[in-house]
Length: 464
Image 1 (cartoon, rainbow, N blue to C red):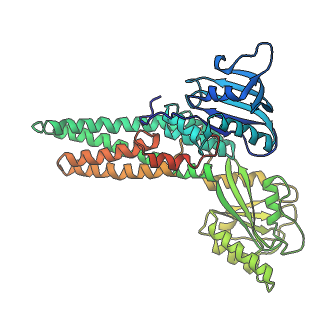
Image 2: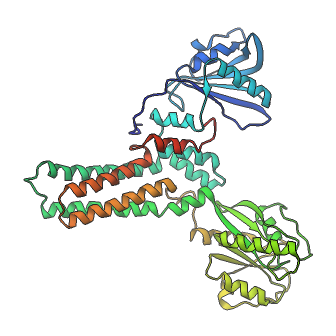
């Protein structure tokens, strides 16, 4: 793959711990660069009848032995050899699998550093994969999305982007823009041959199609944000309506303390659950009521604050009790917000009476038996997506960086179209069209800067 970006190939060799820090059965250290095999050989002593130096080892082979430093054995390890270009970075890569104790990992890392490697920066392995043409920039970002995915749907979206689903569309869009630009610049080079009305209409038609395509991509920004970050849902209601019990049901385990005594929850509790593939951060709040207790008042203040920050209100009502003035006021307060009305205690005789509008929104559940929870999850999904989204019909989803670049492209395309319609001198539409093409190219790294790359890859974890 040709990413379109050109930079000098790295000449140094880097190392980082590729597994999570902490005690575990094994840990993996990754070395990448032109001297990766040489660095590995300096600290590795192979064991066995068929042992051989790493310098003579074939690619994609595993070797047993010890890491040795200053003549002393550091740890018993397995060393894997991967030779360029059949590696993630398209450089020689050596991976050392050692025991997972924090001290032994540190000693192995120190041995590698003393043998000539340097510590990798965050995201530097993926950055090298991009610089060496293994991935484009959108695919590189998908690596981080893959690592941080919290639901199956987010994982599917990240895999699709890593496979090039978004990149293919972006490259096709950029090729269209460059083709139109070449057509306009040809007329600039030959000013005696002005663009005919038919040709101008053809160019305008092609440009309008690209604007529609950009709009379609921009429309996926919200879906992308939901998959990557999730949404915040505040669980509100008066004391003892069943808010904490509902949180426990949605999580599938007991997280919040449940008590028949009103006012048990004095602070907000946040937990994330996967609701039909959507990461939802549920915020269990203190019951909303008038109180003279200073601690409970602070909890109520935080509840209202959580409601203001939430993107979805889950309003819990007690179906076994009559509607109170407080309940009615809260229903009015949040009627303009995205919300789900939950009528709890459906296993008991219902005494709650709602308006026809609220009743149409209400989902009956029993937090005691679990009845209605699946319907509630379906309802939350519809409130978030506006319909059913599955791995099969999931569109490409752009992130905030892509969104900003596409907005610039959209504005430049509109100016290009306006300039052609006004019969401006062709240099002006060509200038705007070049801005649009460059903005689109930023998404896949065809037109990138060192600052942009540093900004993106600095957000990655070490070892990736």
